[in-house]
Amino acid sequence: MSDVVSRREFVASTAVGIAAAAASDIPYPMRPPRPLPPSSRWAAKPVALSSANGLRAAQKAFDMVMQGADTLDAVIEGVKIQELDPNDDSVGYGGLPNAAGVVQLDASCMHGPTKRAGAVGALEGIKTPSEVAKLVLKYTNHIFLVGEGAKRFALQYGFKDEDLLTEHAREVWLHWRANLNPDDDFLDVPEAEHMVVRPTGTINCDAVTPQGDISSVTTTSGLAFKIPGRVGDSPIIGAGQYTDNDVGAAGSTGRGESNIKVCGGFLTVEFMRRGLKPTDACLETLKRVVQLTEKRLLGADGKPKFSLDFYAVNKRGEFGAASLYPGRYAAHDGTEAKLRDTAYLYERPAASR
Ligand code: GLY
Image 1 (cartoon, rainbow, N blue to C red):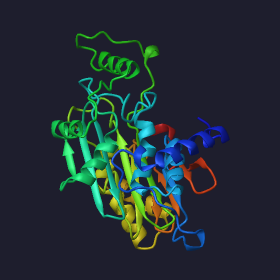
Image 2: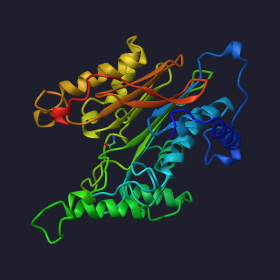
Image 3: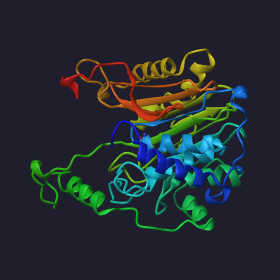
Image 4: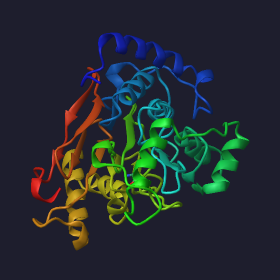
């Protein structure tokens, strides 16, 4: 996909955005869309921010914000594009499965204006876990539902139980299983036939409305071939994402276990509360991650052998992102949805990666 959403895509996506902003088209909306105040009374520069796979999410969320939609409805509708896309094998339908060949999905979200949070972990059979997390947020006294209970909850709200394993994901999993152990009963598949597998992939989306309202969501199929039942950082409030409507929001993609230990979403928002700009807050969080990284995960040069990224927006609509190694992220700041370079801690070290 190009770095900028083309004019044709923009027009199409804006049209979709306008349609989606109609209350009847948003499943279980937080509130109906309402007119924006005149720009002279805007409290923030509206923005939608996402991970590098979220160019369409940033466009959609921004369009919806500008149509007066609620900020959480906007980011959820944004990431759903990726959840429903079978070609993104890191999120939702088509995500790479766990070690048993089963797709288990994680998601969480926070709604700044109402200070509410929702999450689901190890959810099977439902294509859009971000929506289920929103329903936990909106309709329950709880925050986090997992496994069978999360699925039963989703089915009660009319979600369909579907096979999430695409042919592509199944084939990648079969290759992984064949080569897992040279002594097992599955014959190894030659190196040349290996498919390229991204170990983790996830989408985060954060948006600020002209009124300064903020929400965030993160959704993922998690670490490919994980131990069944493993949940990563994405569904953990304060790790995968976090919003404080008085300060800002932050989210993460990459190695979840390393983020969980620093509560990276929360920590990044706390750095912004202390006055850091979004990009600097993300960099500070990454430094904390490195400080807390065990030796087995460091290369010979002392740098992490994994990737991790943070994305952040503040109450004024300033935004930024940072990663351990050079990366990209998507943002729409009122001009266009485009990919930008992240700030980073280290140049990619060839020797240890
Ligand atoms: N950050 C996604 C995961 O580790 O599951």
